[in-house]
Length: 206
Image (cartoon, rainbow, N blue to C red):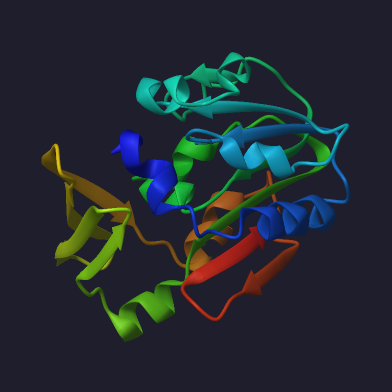
């Protein structure tokens, strides 16, 4: 899927969202991006922002022009070799890929710094439900079929086809409520702000 990742996300408003995150976090200098994928959206961080990333997929990292700034690591308490970041991010549904929010325990935010992420709004998810979706870009098609949802995890079948190849992958996405996020915060974080959108995406600043 990494081969087609940029193609299928080519319409995302990366510039707008990175500008929003940067301003929302009060112009941070040192940034750690968790689950950064190919990190092509790093192009839109302002000059002077020092950004490094963590990504578990070596295929994503290989396709990144920022590969020298990305560590191949699984998200977890032992994943972070450095400390005291002004901002830690987990952007574009990364948190929805985590089977437990406890995997984020120990992220190296300095005291007074921020952890910013976007996540699906659980109420909207359950009200609207999951539907089969299809997209075709430059003769490459993608069909996403929801297989099951148990109130916490949705399992999806992803089929991609172009003129050379056809393959399928199973992806699991986990849905969290604001109460789940408050529980994660404990005494380490507090929710500073929440910004919903018209769609499922909701932004959290901790």
